[in-house]
Image 1: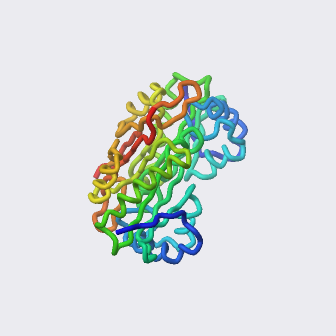
Image 2: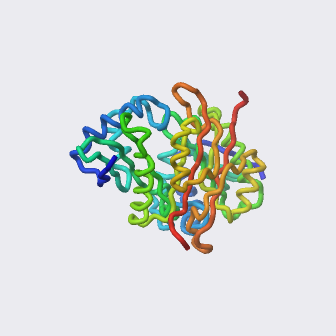
Image 3: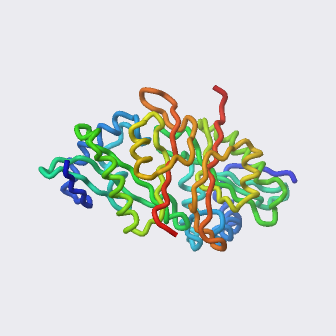
Length: 166
Length: 166
């Protein structure tokens, strides 16, 4: 599947909200309130981050999205944090992997040197495998860090990749 | 040294700012902008957190302070994050240890089940030892996570303790 990955623009929001809303409602991968409002979701995914990208198939269907933001303030702002969501009907087709590699390139061009995920839910095997293939390593696991809607308290991994040679 | 540790009140701010300001300016332990303004420092240390505590000696001198806040939104908000600062002239006298134990008790009473520090600068041996004695474990180390003002890029530990029996 060919994908065009571009910077978010306002016209993307209705499709983007339709795609990310069920992921939040489900409460299995992101810690934000499962009942998050559209306004707060937009602030979280689009307005607060440094940048947000949207992937579409060549016929214009939304396939995925990610954001990139500094993971810490000033003295730690050379390491970014990202969040990724793939459209339900596009899962298992390599979209997450493509988004992740794209985000590493974009992170570099935004001036970041490293990438850190703070809360990769341990029950989300697929995500863990994809991020590992993209070069991120599990650097630690937080016991009982996430209240999974179906599984209750589950562990979460911290994953990390240094993006530049030095 | 006897200490009274109490919830922050507005009257504490001038002493608190005098104590925390040089720590931020120094750029060796907290990631926020070393030139952080008084207003932003107050927002960071006092207004954004769930609660802030101030320790004073029995003659009323400020000895230390800490904040406690949720480390993640809703589905991860049972794990708290804390930050601690000890007054320069009170260091090496067990204040950090006392603050840490106090914060664990307060975290429980605020409804938290776990405690996580996201960025314990690896060069800060004293802090690492004190937190370990208070029961926190290093669950991972982030390479080059912090731009130390004197040392350049240094690693940072993630430390964690589950606070309740289950």
